[in-house]
Image (cartoon, rainbow, N blue to C red; front, side, top):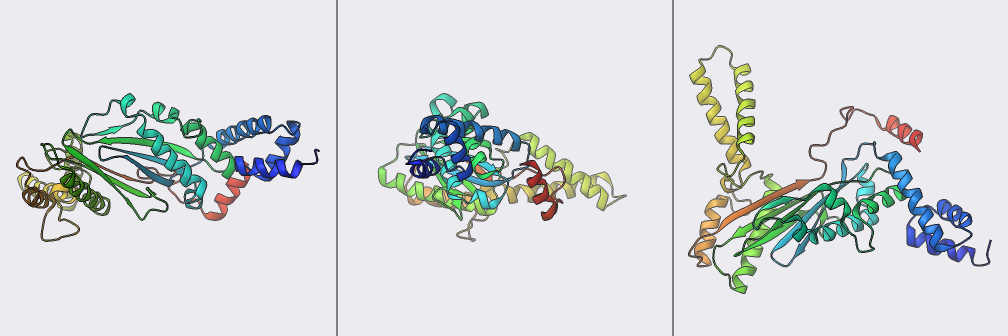
Length: 334
């Protein structure tokens, strides 16, 4: 052991974030060569991450990065526990991943004024600030925290030629990172002056906050995918028939029509009552703002995105695994 062994251990521990026992053993095995020890730690982390990859991970963060007024990226990374998801290393990874996703805009060929889901392989291979890929960053952190860290998805939202794109993160645990994020793109249809552009940016942020709070799923009924509307109608038909056996088909159809219409108002942004002024719907707000800003061609929402950590992810055991059993399972997998 060299005379400066403790200094080497401290330096590698700070650089890698790995447990001190792993740092010491890798340094000793590498003959106290920092570069070789760092590579050994990286491989050790990848191996540990592979063992944990099958474990359920539905906590974590959604991170947002923005480039001027024209491009926003959103990336979700999952962890097994909220404790790790709120930790500084996890926050740094999520923020770096969102920033790296911005660089994929030309490669992803995202259409202006629309939401584009990034190809998973492209996203996983995107380079972080230190030169490693997002996938490698997740694996390295998994080895450090002894949890499954999983990249889940990423999106790009760009402004149209005469529009802006704005974002909002609900109750952020770090700048641009939290459990719910929303993005809204506004289209004015004509060249914008800088002052008007700034006002639209703020309006877009307010609408993104509204969307996060009101769980807006679609811009309007007209913009809703036909499959989503058909699925909702089928659900309402089944529930109504079960609740009202023996009712004539034409009566049931009218009841279902009413339920579908109400559901559309609940989930479509333009039909919702504006969160910051309940005397207006969002559609009425846009008309009002267009008049105040003297936008002759009006103001429209061209893109809407709302992402919540863990939505759609469910445990195979239905979430019934008790705490003691979970700790035992985790201990057994190490």
